[in-house]
Length: 270
Image (cartoon, rainbow, N blue to C red; front, side, top):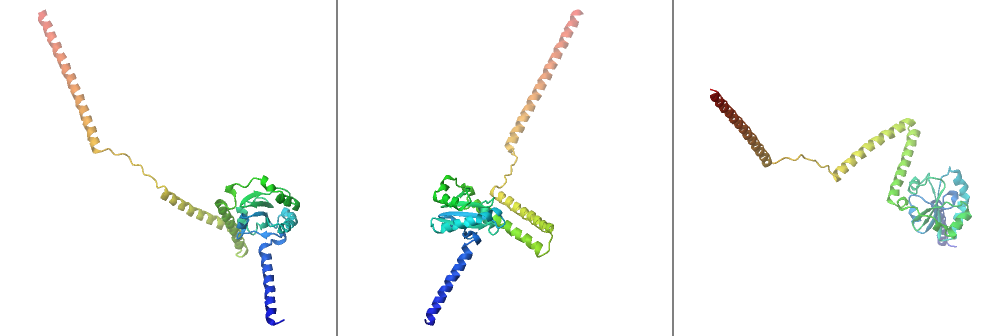
């Protein structure tokens, strides 16, 4: 065999070996024997039919499920209609928040973007029967607002990622810089207060821009109205004065009449 065919053959064998190594490290999750699902490829489950496992290396129940899940993953390789994936929550905390994983292990059945919780037997035969007999049709789908592909769950995933970064920073401060635990907590507390104050101020400014406050002014009477009111008051005063003068005049007339009567009486007696 000449040098050129040997070189081509070695290059082909090396390429196949490299592809096999990359595929093994990128798609197989340890002893679970299933595709590794992480932040970069989780959207693959939105198409087709999937069974997805969420586990943690320290979880005893996850360890007991591991061989059964591996056998189920091998069975799925001969069936093109079903795909199997697994996620280590310690590596992908964002997916933990996106899928709202509260117990371990948690298994999801996904069919064309519709998510269901798998709550049946955790042995290989039960999972195979669940797929073959389409038992997933008897289960209710996860509501739209809790679906992992919704906007609100994307925000939750970002918060979980942030919490993971904060935990890493906390460990770094204690391990590399020798900071005590209370010192690290104090730094995070001050940072939380400072960031909260800034966000609160920004929120208030945004609300003021969107809904500006309305200033209520006291109604001011026109000068014409004031003049009218003053005119009315002067007329009323004049009426009162006229009535007083009339009363005085009538009082004087009655006094005059009385004096005349008294004089007549005196004359008669004389």
